[in-house]
Amino acid sequence: MNAVAEVPPVIALRGVHRVYPGTPPVHALRATDLTVRAGEYVAVVGPSGSGKSTLLNLLGMLDTPTGGVYALNGVDVAGLPDADRTTVRGSTVGFVFQAFHLLPHRTATENVELAMLYNRTPRRLRRTRAHEALERVGLGARRDALPTTMSGGERQRVAIARALVNRPSLLLCDEPTGNLDSGTTSAVLDLFGGLHEAGLTMVVITHDPVVAARAGRVLEISDGTMRERQAANGRGR
Image (cartoon, rainbow, N blue to C red; front, top):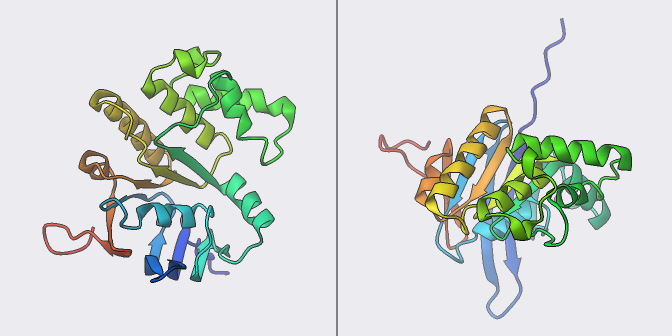
């Protein structure tokens, strides 16, 4: 009887670092090892300029590491050509940003549909999948609304639907509640909790301890060095 092959982690970093040239050079992220398995909900915290955004850009293949190995779902993506990296990113990674990045004169449905242009989803499927994604985030009734008529929380939900529509294996969020009030933040975090319970792998960059507290695991970055946050019993979470 054949043994069942072990499922590779969604994220596996080995010695990944990013140095920006200059005098002196800037070590934005020092040699980092990180494993994130399928279904984990990870928060990354740290002060401004600590390396959080650099890490997110590397994980999302928006930037390339100076050195090290980055395996995404078991595939080494660190050295892929730009075109291949774009293809993998479009089919595997969803992004949610603080500023929403919605086109103001496109409906919620049209904004979500735009995410499917990059992976060549057939036109006949885009509208259906966009509506399904908006239903998933509780905005089915607002699918024809323009972002200019929406609250901040509704706009962020559209952005989350856009991130989910290609059915990614990894959701990366950069300060996703930074422009929201406390009540709306709680609603968005409840939505994230539901996505996590459904099995989605999530990495959330945040400075907000309330946001970080919802994650199952917290990483801290300071001066480009990352470490696991220690629990009260002295062991990493």
